[in-house]
Image 1 (tube, helix red, strand yellow):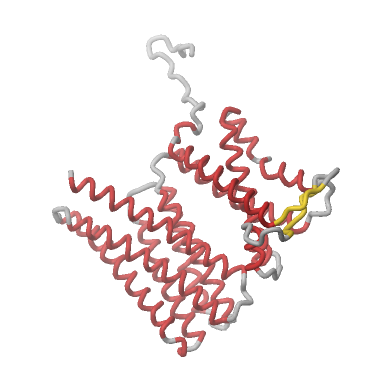
Image 2 (image 1 turned 90 degrees about the vertical axis):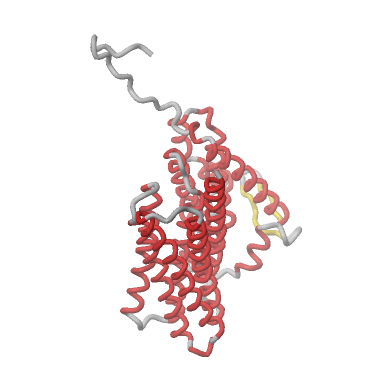
Length: 362
């Protein structure tokens, strides 16, 4: 009984660590990607932070599994599991050592520091590939682990093989790899146990991509359209009419949660994506403070509704973002914990009676 309780606690702690560290890694990576003109030293320290977080994650998850294994009898069939647990700890220590060397000895030179970090990224990526190849667990998660780890290894190899790239480019390549691995860590931390939770994860990932890339692309360049604000709101929710056709209109709250998630990706990711993908050079610090309501009555945008327009100040935008985040969080948490609500109306076809060959009436 005690062993079972410990294993559940160990699993919960590991999932929390994966989720939180993944979120922080995503945030730092986005800052690096959206600010390529930062001083090179700042870029190096930010990149070192993301690589260090991933090394910390390897230490935490590997250590928890090793301690959990120590409470069980050691059988020969568990030997491979012990190698994997302790190997993850060893990899975490190795990469953590590289990060410490970068932070404590900046005189090594920017190219050497970034090369050390790139080696760390490659090692962590290889560890992920091995984790994904080993049988066991949800196939979707294993595939995502292999994909993100493989891309990290590929990026490291390409840069090491072609060493003439600009140093800022090396920092951006590392940040992209760590962003992908951060996403994988968050999804792994959620640890879906029901296939319908995988469906929900895919809907969330689609909503984020749709809001961050497609909607922001429209929003950055299309504001001359009459009644633009109304059209933008309609565009947030348009894809989820299909969801309602599949799930039934009683699931309108799920569609609203996903549409609001799209709107959050638009309002919070607007200039991050503009800087990263579309060549903008907005100073992100003051802009994000305004979006989060921290600049009080300062003007941030104008909502154009055709026949009228609304001035949106910083505090109004902040309240709007926080309320939407609350609704999205509660809504998606509900469906995550009630996965049977998803696709509940799709029943397998009734089997014909072996005696009569007739399908029974519903």
